[in-house]
Amino acid sequence: MILPSENDVLGSSDWQTETPRIGLRTFDERDLDLFLEYRNDPEIARLQGWELPYTEAEAHEFFEDLSQIPPGTPGEWHQFAVVDKTTGVTVGDVGLHVRAADPSTADVGYTIARSYQRKGYATEAVGAVIKFAFDVVGVRTVFANALAENEASRAVAERVGMALDKQWLTNDGEELVRYSIVN
Image (cartoon, rainbow, N blue to C red):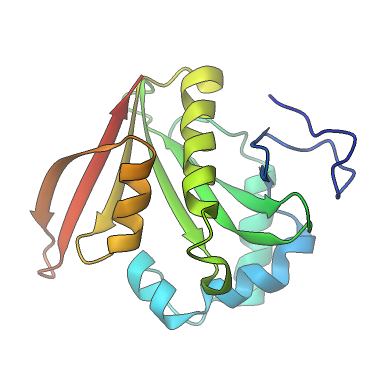
C-alpha cells in the first residue's frame, strides 16, 4: 500500500495506491454526485452495459458493499475512486476482480466521467491497478474486456502494455475484445 504524501489535498490516509497525479481509494459519500452523473450518462452506460436510471439508492448500496470488500478479494469486484490529487475531484473509477476459480488471474474495468476523458486518467488508473494487482495482490495475469467499437478503451489497454488476445461475438451480436498482460 502506498500512502498519500503530506501535500495530499484530501488530507486522507485511505489511498490504496497512487501515481504522481491520481490516488485510488474506496468510494465514499464525497464521490456521490459525480458517480451518479457518469453512471447515468447514456453513452457511458451503453458502453459499460448497466441499466438506466442508476439511482442514488443503488449508489449508496454500492458504496456500502465496497466498504465491506477488501481489494483483491477473490470472486468480488472492488471499484476504486480515481481522484485527481491536485483538485481532490473524483474523475471516475477503476475496478479489480480477482477470479475466484483462479486467484492468479484478475480482470480490470474502468470508467471515466465524460468531462474528464482524454486526459490520461484511465491510462494512469489502469496502470496503477495492474501494478497493485501484481505487486500487492499477487496476481500473475490481468485481463480487460471492451466492446470492439470502444476505441478509447482499447487504446487504454494498449497504452498500459496489454495485448489483444481474443475477439468474439456476444449472443446479442456485439463484438467484444479481450486484452491481457502477464507479470
